[in-house]
Length: 217
Image (tube, rainbow, N blue to C red; front, side, top):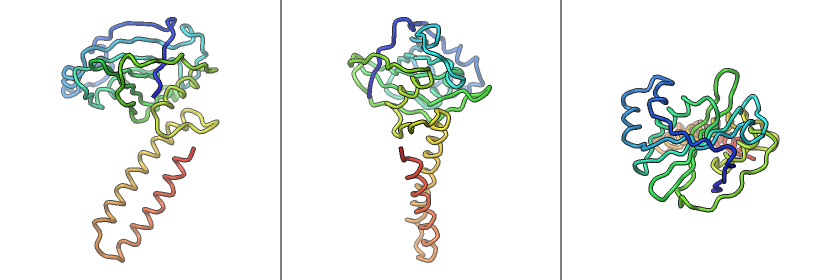
C-alpha cells in the first residue's frame, strides 16, 4: 500500500461536525449511534481541485476530497462510511486513524449526470501512521489521478484505456459474480443427488468463466 504526501496547496483542515453529515440524508438512529460510538472526529484535510492543485477536472471527477477520520476503536461499520459518501457528492479518499496506526479506505465513485455511481468500499491493511509517504503522482486530470489513488486499494486494476465509470461497473459485476459463484458452490456441496448436481455444476463452471473474464486486466 502506498501512502501519498498531499500538496500543501490543497490543505483544507476543516473539522466536519457529524450533524453536517446527518443533514444530507435520512440517517437512522442506529447509524447515528454508530457514528457516536465509533467516530471521534472527522477532518476534511485536503481538497484536490483545479483551483488548489492545478489539475483539470472531468465530468466524472470534479474534485477529490481527503478525509482524516479518527476512530474510537479499530472497528468502523460500513454503514458509517456509506453514509458519509452519500452525503459528499465528489470522490473521497479516507485515512482512518486509531492510536498510532492508519488505514486507507475509499468507495470508487464517479459522477454520472446528476447522480454518483459508487462501488463497494475497499481498505488497505493497517500500517504505522508515520509510515513514509510518496509525492502525489503526476496526472493529466483528476479522473486519472483518482484512478491511481484507487489502484493501491482495489484488487482488480483498471484496464488500459478503461474509463473510470466502466471500471467501477466492472468491479460491481465482479462482486456480484463472486456472490453467485459462492452460492452455487454451496448448493453443489449440499446437493446429494448426482442428477441434480449436473446442472448446478454447469452453472458454476459458467459463472467461474465469466468471473475470470471480468477479472482479466
